[in-house]
Length: 313
Image 1 (cartoon, helix red, strand yellow):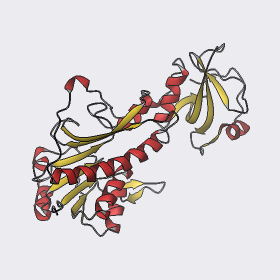
Image 2 (cartoon, one colour; image 1 turned 180 degrees about the vertical axis):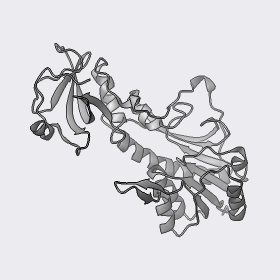
Image 3 (cartoon, rainbow, N blue to C red; image 1 turned 90 degrees about the vertical axis):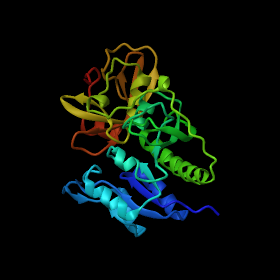
């Protein structure tokens, strides 16, 4: 039986948890877990451990939290744990060449898109925002570029018509974990062929900004719905209501004739609150006003009645 490689696991948020858990359950020796430093979180802004650290502690694993992986002291720490291979899943820092070259068997990355499509920080969000019908996960051998390394394995999956970022995120995290373990096992037997990325097919998924989430009511209703789905639950698409942010958490498109100008509210129906778009209406179903809880639009309208004709900016 082929000896399992000693793995240095590098990850921070919830997306990385299925991969770490699967590696541990399958008996892969974890030489150490590297994650971001604790950060202030919650209303009290007390330091909180990232999700990967919390799981690593449950498994009794060594945890390293360098402020910067470029610090020479981090390389010294790597020298002490001597990994054969690194696995990177949403770690949150760019790895310098010295770190990439350290594990003899290289650094594997779980990327939640079908590379070379959607390189960058927010591939799951953008795949939904741009209306993709299919996405997937890629296991890549990392190089110094941004998500530009050789592809070791990929698995495709359809994007559901109503699937949100949160739902797709969780599915791809599980899919990536399973594909990772399969790829590591196939690497050990020499059954994996490296594939160069086709540079002519590269697309990007840049970091989200506040402007990304702002709804333009002059767009088609389907485009607005994709934005709502792609940013649910976080950071959420939003519009302005009397100068306040109104997050839109759930809505559906209703194409058809429209008499109101874009952004104008029509009379509420049992299905929700219609807002005019360029080619029909967006039916708001769940919203959250700044400083309030998310709620069904019917509950929101009881406390904040909107007259037909009022404009969302």
